[in-house]
Image (cartoon, rainbow, N blue to C red; front, side, top):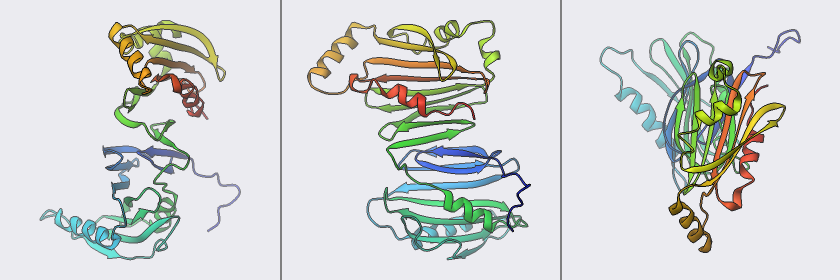
Length: 317
């Protein structure tokens, strides 16, 4: 049924992880993560239950999707415990076309197990060659098919422009594709995503409830204390400025240890990149009532990268 002009469009949010992005209802959040870019798992939860799951693994060359789906549905039966409801499965449901948007050998499926159901699909990306198994979950009495179709069609399984979108709990940033996730903290008061490429590093952080975090400190004093442990091996300067209308602190630094300076000199003579420069920006997003930081340790050839990451980060609507 067409939406009436008087009815507002449902609010949505972007979830981005390990090269996958999808727009989902605003109150859905990441519930579980595992693995890395080559093989992993992402679960997105609604307010009442898990609502979406994405599993992936990387393969070079074509993969038999019929076998992938068959193995996945057999696992549902195998993992069923004695007192669990029977699992009913259906293959090749034609929920999506066989080939859709560069997806090889796409096959849709459906299963129920008592009070739950899922519509899903599996495919291999013709561009990145990752194999994806994606399903949308709901209660057995829900009319789930149309929502599942829209969500499955909306899933992007690789970046288009060399920048990977990372988005969760209201934080949305973009990181160059060559950097890999090296660690994360996903907490109510702090989101901290860390990325690495050999000796170069990127960290994107967001603190909630900025006024509580700052307390009676000004932004510069707070930044010097908050980042003291992270920057103890660097000689840094802190400069107050404005970033996109927000009060901000720019941090620049170089290695404090003699050994690090020698290593930088040697690697540069060998024309090899070395993370020898701190370039960071911390700002107070007053409309969003949050604090953000982009902290980069980069080679001389990448000094402009931190500024581009900051510009690509969405701190408030």
